[in-house]
Amino acid sequence: MKIHIVSGSQRKKPRAGDRRTTKKHGEQIRVFKMVTDMRGNVIGYDCTGGSQRYEWVAIEDADKHGAAHHWTREERLKFADVVVENGHTFKRGESTGVSSLAGLRVCGQCGIVRRADGQNKPCRGTVRVELRQPAIAVSDSTEGGAA
Ligand SMILES: [Zn+2]
Image (cartoon, rainbow, N blue to C red; front, side):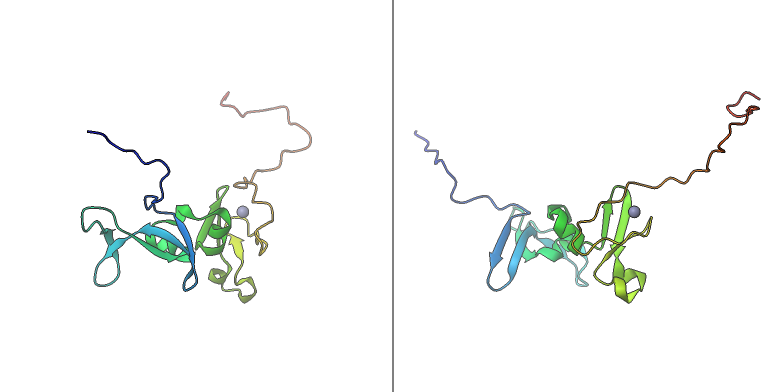
């Protein structure tokens, strides 16, 4: 028996994270189809028919389908409720209650407001608060557990 292996796959296997743009829906992302209960709570993956099922959703809805990791950095900044970067948690400006911050990201740790284009430097990691050392060293050091 001869088996033909067709090279060059015209039909790509569907994968979560695939993108497409349609006239009707704009840009969409392929996600695992979820089974929801009557209240709309996700209760599992839809594998009816023996294989994982997929569906297309708007890019911004990816997180609702457990596919937020397929977002690009820009999309994450735009769509995620909370963006974690360098240990800092950027929340939506709306959640601060300050109307002028709507649509912006505010760092919950140091209060930095990200520029709308997201191009400002990321926070420098978790800021450590330290007591200032006195300019002149005091000689009787009881520190270090020598007492
Ligand atoms: Zn920060």
